Image 1 (cartoon, one colour):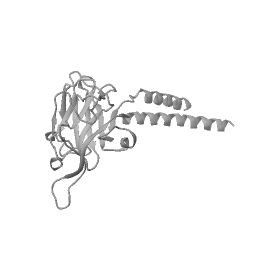
Image 2: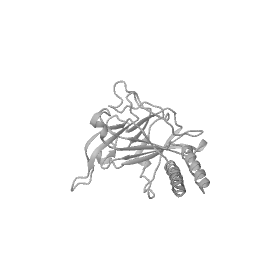
Image 3: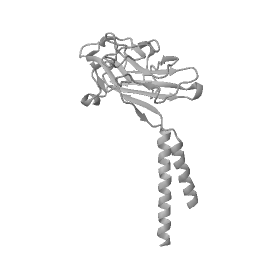
Image 4: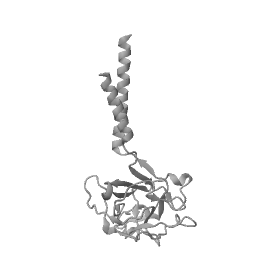
Length: 244
């Protein structure tokens, strides 16, 4: 019995280290019209999540952007709307339509956005001002003002012939350290007695620090490994007490 517990613990421990630690990459849109420093970096205007789906030639990267409550996508002035950088040029950007979405799926409506040319140059100030450099990829919301804004989330696929995988090198940042810039209306409400949306302000928000979100399998195997080791230690302790 002791040998069984030992074998199980070793197996689970090795399995937990064999599961890839990389999974979703997530950014918080934490800056609004100024650098991500000091108290300005503590805001949350929404999240951007990138996850790899499939493997080999079928691998693709799916990006989901969900804005915080009462924030809406819009493209004001000369801003492109949603802009980012990548080290690998994708073959296509496909906006998904999930409207109405299945249970648990983020709402997305391709008719509300326009995909811009690949590997272009998109200026979303202030995060591209000075020596920061422009972004190479962009999607523009069709809404240009609060009265026409309707979308608070979007899902799109990035694909490439031969497959496109998620890695640290896939999403890059401009010289200012910004990975994403998103033009939004902030604190938007429909005033009492009115039908049109009104936003307290508009501006470009950005993200500059990604974090890894481990796959569920990683947590499961790690917990199982710890459970196995704990069981083995408890068994050995009981055996020692019996001998005494």
